[in-house]
Amino acid sequence: MKIQKLFLVLVALFLFLITGCVNGVENEEQKIEVQKRVGEENKYEDFNEVTDNKIVQKVKKILDDVDWEIAKVDMARLADYRFVFQFKNPEIESKAVLYELWVSPSKDKVEIVIDAESKYTQLNEKDSAVLFGILTGEDLSD
Image (cartoon, rainbow, N blue to C red; front, side, top):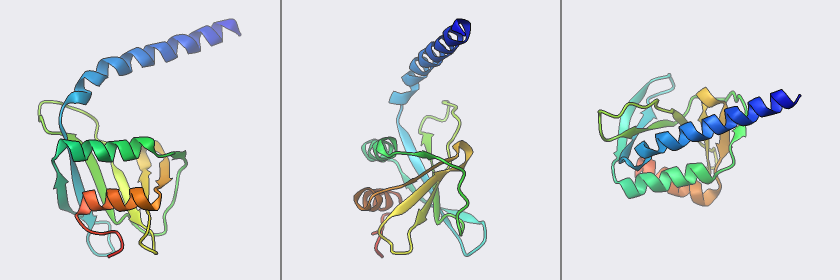
């Protein structure tokens, strides 16, 4: 039993150290590429690109501060939008995480899913409006 606990502690320490080494890339400027669903099919087209690093960091903070649920969700319809963070420097390789975004029927909140990580969240009204405005350049209630 002690060996298993020691192994788990060593694995956690290793992952912590690896994460620290990767954080050097964190200071690199990023952009957000946004796509919008076209029609009712699973087709998306490029819609917007957010390149201002301060605004990109604001979106990252919103997403970092929410409580993500670990859940495999099956939404009633396809995502309204989807977006990814990309490094502006094309020489930096990273695995893009696809965020899928649904606007609630009442148009006051958004729901976000990271399907590859089985994560789900619904933002509060304030964060929903800010995030939607940044990603689309439009008001959430429109």
